[in-house]
Amino acid sequence: MSGIEADARTREALHVAQLYYERDRTMEQIAAELNVSRSSVSRLLSYAREIGLVEITVHSPQQGSTAVARRVAERYGISVHVVSSPPRTPDAEKLERTARAAARALAATLDPNASIGVAWGATVSAIARHLPPKRLYNSQIVQMNGAANEITSGIAYSGAILERFGQSFGADVQQFPVPALFDDPSTKQLMWRERSVRRVLDAQARVQVFVFGLGSPTADVPSHVYSGGYLSGDDLHSLMRDGIVGDCATVFYRIDGSSSGIQLNERSSGPSLDAIRRIPRRLCAVSSLSKFDALRGALAANLITELVVEETLARRLLES
Image (cartoon, rainbow, N blue to C red):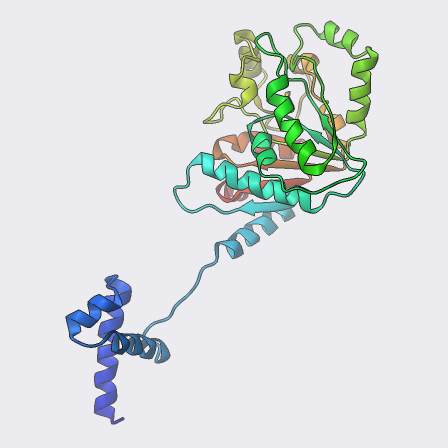
């Protein structure tokens, strides 16, 4: 090919590449416009790439999320799974994606004889829907906090979550049929002395894996404990007065991770933050950016050893 012919082909290749990559024309449209065959257009596009007129870079979301996960893990000293979502993904879909990743992460590393504690909530309910079947032997699913209030026993809601865990892993289920929040701390102390309740409390103390989401009083979609009739108006004012940013199994905490002096915790059926910290593996899933403060507080309280988090929220953590 002569120099003149090479220059002419380069100009043709550039023109075709501009139509294809910059103006989003199809090969068929370009072929019709230039009165050439589709194969000629394809060859010119290949030539444009060969001589460097066009450079194609593939950006993998997985690579970006892996880097974010590594940085979050290094900052907080925990295991991190970051879940990517396309732009403008609705919050409901982000929750499902995060829950699916959490379900897989949980099931992949469970061993026989595992005792798994479960805190009810919308996120854990979504995780339960996505659990893959994995037969565990001599294993147990333990409800970590009560679900009853003056409107409902909570058994239908929390029981459905626990049963999905039990069916997926072929494990026995230990329900905890007590109020989420007692009216009087002294009533709680009396009930904690009952042998039937004591049996479940002892099972909670033996839990090796804890699966939970985070409640938040300021979430865009209110967490179940804040919208399901569990808190009175006085309770909500108490939370505001105490500077509450979130809860784990209906045990409330501030943004610095502290929980001392929070009156509602004296009535809560959930395990204390100290008891949670004694559980070896503590898997938390969070997908909503509106739970940013709840997540910061949980991390400050050292409640999490393994975090499954939507990428937008993970990046926000790194910016804080």
